[in-house]
Image (cartoon, rainbow, N blue to C red; front, side, top):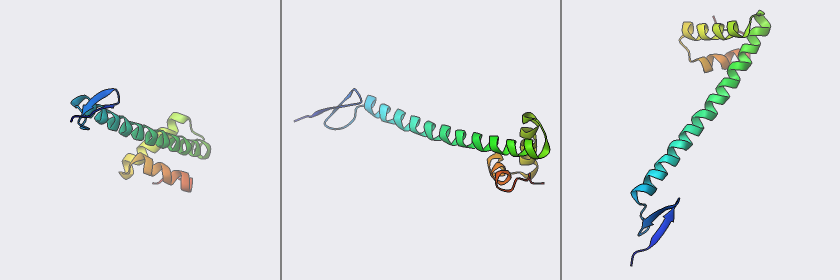
Length: 96
């Protein structure tokens, strides 16, 4: 006896997902990964904004100049921007 199940609007026979249902599951996994990346990027963006504010206040520079200082320090110290930004937030000082 063959059972038929519907998965996300796609029929699966014998409890096994059809190719369409399998591709749907793959797409869901892909979108969940993309969502996780976007959430991480949003958090990093907020941290960058905080560090820029620290530099704008302490060095009396514009927003663009503050970002340039962060970017240049990241390249000079060979550190990922987000990790450098966390140090600026913690210490209030741009690494040399």
